[in-house]
Image 1: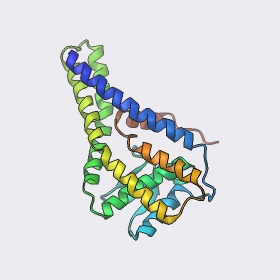
Image 2: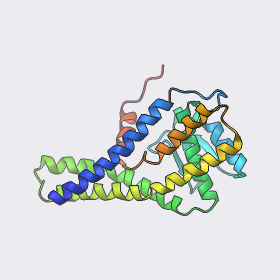
Image 3: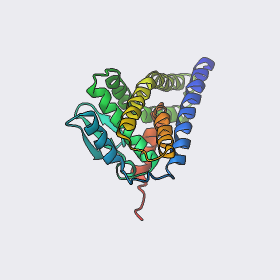
Image 4: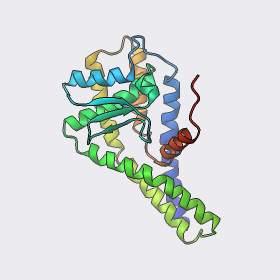
Length: 224
């Protein structure tokens, strides 16, 4: 039991670090607007044109994967606040997904592995949480619960192994942004690139993604 718990704590520390790092930087740069008024959707579309990639659509997201590139239908989906937003964070998230479309265009196969991993781990994470809570309630802490901890830890560690794919997408995105001369000053460039860098660890765990989607679904924000 001690070994299972130790593995779980290491995985938990990694996921908490990755998620908190991303949320901190994302929140800071969400206060800043790009001077040109460029939106995330327009940026993603512009990056596709600049790179000479045809057939990739950019749509407003509403589901579990708010920011996602779908290789099977060549579609970039962006959260509403990123699709129509002009904050540094919105542009960074749009650029990150555009970077994945560029990976796909250039035949970067790890992208497809990363896409499959994220889908499976997000969908598996919430059931694992529910099973864990049920086993605790039934007092099965010495039988089933350690296996739940091990399964969740394996998911977290596997996601960590695919982080280089996210870093590569961010690198490709920064290269395109530099060539497009999107930024008017150094502050804009640094702010957007900070979020792009942090986005690589945004999906180390699937639990936070699934729970945040569930919260938005059950308690949708009121329009002001």
